[in-house]
Amino acid sequence: MGSIYAIGDIHGCLDKLRVLMDRIASEIDPAQDTLVFLGDYIDRGPSSFEVVEYLIRLKARFTDVVFLKGNHEEMLELYLNGVDRTLYLMNGGNQTLENYLDHSDENEPYPIPVAHRNFLSSLTLFYETEKYIFVHAGLKEKVPLDRQKHEDLLWIREKFIYSTYDFEKQVVFGHTPFTEPLVMPNKIGVDTGAVYGNKLTCVKLPRLEFFHA
Image (cartoon, rainbow, N blue to C red; front, side, top):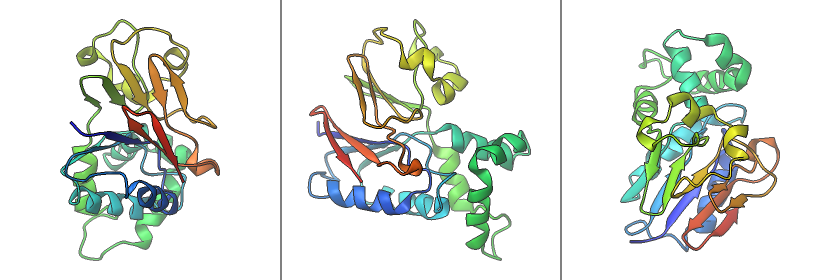
């Protein structure tokens, strides 16, 4: 089995995503290694449309690439379905919708293209390997992975961040931004606040090597 490269929250920061992918390009083997994106590709940053477009194209270049759902993708889906629209707009959704309108196609029935809607609907809530569990926000203690609540996988913070519980596998997550990656025996946090002027982070496993942009 090859290495795993897990990338934290992008939030529409296309330039940082491109730089980061360039930095790992000489290391990663598209045929052997696994690339995992931990969600929150959109909102708050300037280029949500372009980030999703980039990721869709990236999928064709890798044998094994995993896209997890973040709470922001969840909020966009709810918005598009007419549910809880205010919540989405209060969390950076306006920038994303304006960005999509700038790229709208008169042949598309919605500002969000079908290919992007299909991408959103294809996102998974977690990814598990022999040694790791990858998830957007985290896990609740003493709950089997297949019984974790949807909202915890996408939204949990303090109860997971401060937990020393042994989840049996190290949990790799995003969602909660840190100045530097968080490394604990039971978890690795790789959201380093790219959209807040800090860096976008990738962790290479099992080597535990970090790349930044």
